[in-house]
Length: 305
Image 1 (cartoon, helix red, strand yellow):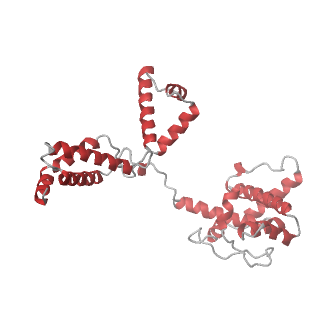
Image 2 (cartoon, rainbow, N blue to C red):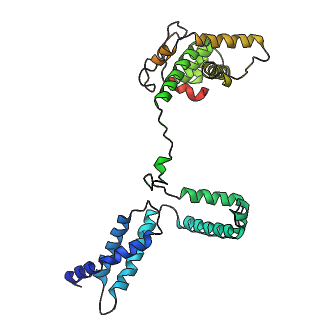
Image 3 (cartoon, rainbow, N blue to C red):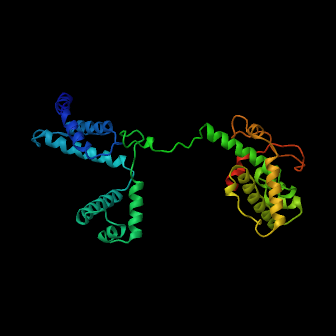
């Protein structure tokens, strides 16, 4: 066909694309872009006009309509990252669930649904997980279903930032209140990220002893901070069996409490608790009575919370 005939066919049959897109739209999830479908349909319409031969095909509308519909389906398959088998299984499970709900007049249990699908409950759970993973949700969907409205905001508010900074301050005080050897293990291995073998050589002990000192220090740090912020979380430790251990722990908690006040603890982190300041790296004497500021202060928090 000549170009003028192709242009005329495309202009007079543009409504075919809109009709097929509209027919599919009612079955599509809200995240599918209708403009993408329209573009695919228009491309199929142009190709159909170029391939049309009036002497062999009576109706251009029927010829182009079939091609447009197949083009739209191909576009949808390209937009869907989930395998077709997953979609087919999801439709089958939904149909069986719907039939069971109607027959039982209630929501079927997992065992009933698995029996109807001729599979085990474990296989059903796996299939449901795959189906859920294949779902696509829109962050800006309808107001009643918008995912962006139900997602938790993980950013700390002003109160959360203040509590975090206070906890960092207590962490600094708790490490400094440790006895020399456990403090050296924490500083060298956790804060300065030095290998345990180097710490063992510096202390003149075995690596297993360093590991034991580290475990004891972490437990003591956790209880020391909790004693200041939430006493109910303090573990009994050796208090119930050894009065000596109980007195040592109580004295350690008291040293942390006396190490500073809220202002001094907040001053450790300045305006941004994530920004490191002066470090322990290169300090020869970690037993100094001065009050050093830790490298990567927040690095210890996951271990003691």
